Image (tube, rainbow over all chains, first blue to last red; front, side):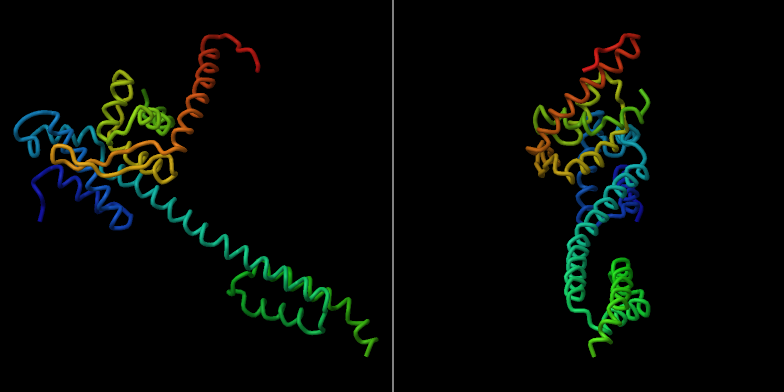
Length: 155
Length: 111
């Protein structure tokens, strides 16, 4: 149903263009409704909700699309910040785990571990940690290769 | 004055207005127009995203208030917002002094 109240029509149009969660959308619409009602009432006239006072208040407020675009930009920035905040601890844990594993392997070189890891990383590039794991695995394989003659000799 | 010139300083001006006490968005827009002598006649809708951004960055706090049967979201400076106002005032003072000097053809003493 189309509202004949210009302020409610404006708010419905704005709400449609908002790309935010329902709680934030509800807050934004309630907040802007309060502003527009106050601005229209300040323009005077008994019929401020539907008369020219409401139209003037809306004209001063600006286009719904532009206001929605600015709110959407903030929501997008907030989502990116949340993702970054969630990923940083995982990246730190992964890096520390790989560093610890590499340290252990460096002191106890086994003939197959480095090659096995390199083979695994190349076979499953979609697995997490590839940017870190691939050069590490390559380094370990080279390390093992240099250890091999000694290993063979000690047999 | 061009809207984009005002937009670049909007956050600082909103913080400065709220530095004098809590206000709702409509009150902020009236105060912005009053203090600028009508020079900064922005679309009023643009101040709300700025208020939300400042709140998200921890410089403002907000709460619902009911006045005359109308719900209003009232904004106030947080403690880091109060520090930000002091910083921005100082930054603006030195920036505007430098711009004045450039437009006036005078050189400021380096310091």
